[in-house]
Length: 378
Image: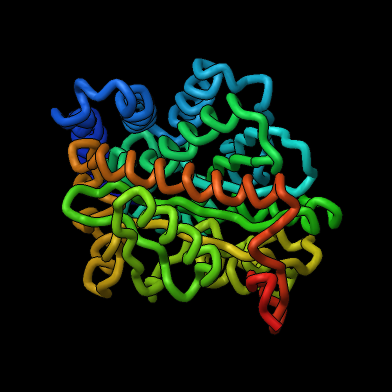
């Protein structure tokens, strides 16, 4: 039965309204007064501010990808940059910055750059593994500033800092696409790693939705390795900061998951869980050898904890994330700078141990999941 003229008119008007609202949505971050004359902090904070404003103001996800690549090149990191096509369902790519060290042992940092919105078209695209994303992401109401231009900005600043140093470890900064359509970028990346590469990964740190005004940054309990959590908390205390922990959200996950556990069975389950019927469509990430590395996840405390916020974020554009409420105006640059310093301090300790050939941990496996134990543990 053909659609009536009134139905077509309603669809057209709804589309135009979304387009109009998305064009009016872009905001910018605010530089706190206490940092405006702080010469030691200002370069890093200004760098993160520029990254967030550029990515959040770049429209759809392909625009965000282009803005991120421009930021990488502007910072002089192009010689360390490579890209990786994700799969046949979309045009997004993974961007990888690899800072070489004296050792072939790799420490991963991961953040996704794509955004999403809660509307019926997004739900349809999700079930098609993000196939419609190129068309619909430019009209999303969300700026994608909190989720996850914040995480990208922290890691890009950290990558620039590591590029200026002589490092013991090799640092791989993975900026993934298609996270919002089933962790597709990270799943594919891990699946494509050779066995020797997987064996050289010491651990992976994921940063997703941090620096939210009115909320502290937190380590995610239940998924974060206890020893890595201890190292992060110790680095925070040394700087005079408090780093809290937050329970793992019941209804959401992030790009730490494929690092923590990946095999054909687990990836197939992830597809069904995240993409519903889309999970039975052919996936590049199915072809993965089993593997696991310890992970550490950072997010703002309380993000996506309640089922009510999950429902509104997923089905209607009124949640704290995935809606017009995800705006650059809600970014706390001071909190982002704290997290940057914590990560930098944590790496300072790990680098020192590596140079002295005195690692503070060893990797063990239990039920297929890798974790870290102190070298003194029995």
